[in-house]
Length: 315
Length: 274
Image (cartoon, rainbow over all chains, first blue to last red; front, side, top):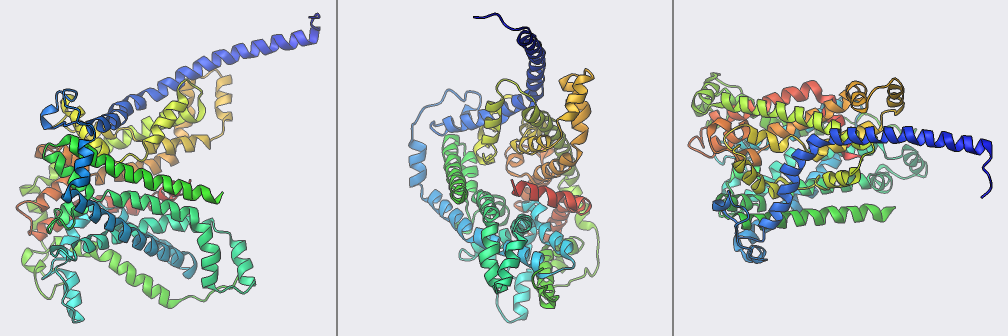
């Protein structure tokens, strides 16, 4: 090794001095980072992370109400709870009702939200904020409260819905009291409550759709409908997927609607997967309830993963 | 500009009709809350109350302790909002601006729990709350919701967007890292606090499954729990009472919405477009 030249030496000295100061700064930063994270992390570990793990473990055991104090003194039953869930006719019925609620309710909710968003964005120029606020109002209200109100609106004899139908000569059904229309009634209410949410997010998404493309398409002679199909919809794709996934995740867990309006009836026609899980908790079958909850969770994960796949496909 | 369309009167008509349908349940709820049962069950229905009275509300507070439920809902919401603002801001800032061991693991773990449904958590949370002897007190309602992943996501995004130079300047002046956060960045986070605060308040006020699970006695019922149990109990067809109850649950939210409308809409829009 040759002797180091004076400027290089000076440079290295300066560098080491700098890294020394940098080191002190790093230690202070690390200390501050840990201190600022600590309260969140402690509460998070205790009330979220640990329950996720315990819930998973619990679903492979016969844990029940009597095991509150000794959640580890339970019998391991491997996949029994899961096998039982898949063969449980009531759960099958609840899973089917939940699937119908999602498959019918989600598209209607999003189409209504999209129609409202496009109408507000392109169709009108005045009172936009007024309509936007009005359509969004149900979204912020307690489902329990609006379910109570809807129960009254759908009352077969003196409910306003059937009284209005009677005016135009239609005898309305016993909405939530009839096995054939009960789930449909809950879907109607869910669409009413949630389409405003889809609308708000899609309205924000519409701002991102290129105005230049629209203009170019118009110059090429595309009519409004063609522009909607070929410019607006492709531009809205990521936003639509986001709305699709968040709405589906919400609907997969519907609980308050049947709890308040029908208590799962009539004849379990509106029993949802969440409600059945809650009932099993009430009966003290906690291991079984854990397995049911995890089955719902797995479906949610699949929906999420599929969305990410679909979004990435485009890039 | 591409072809400007003429104002479409029929679209205004259509939207107004839709708005009427959307608002009808609320109009019916408020009008119904001051009608006696005989009038609520009348056919044809009366729109405006014939003999308005506050009897339904009086019964609500006498028979069903709605005053207590209201108090519980408010206390829980205040603590949950305060906890989420403070703790999410602290962790969000640390993740956005500070370098510390375990940072990536923490970020991954917290974001990984963003999608976990309450359905998966409530039984272990119940076991935990029972063993900590929290059941029967409002702590059981507050503690599990003091920190939520969504707040961290929002606050981290917000702090990433603030200029770093503020901290550099303060460091030259000799301020410590904690001081820099509390004195410089936290006061700048007010807009993010408005959004997160409103969304958290909404979530807490309307929350149902967990408050229902830990409601072993009336003293810890929140408004939605109280209303749901009244609606499924002996007052099942006492519509006047139920509509008054729904009005009590919904009105504070509607008031907050009317005042802070802008933040609601912005908040939802930001969460939608990542």
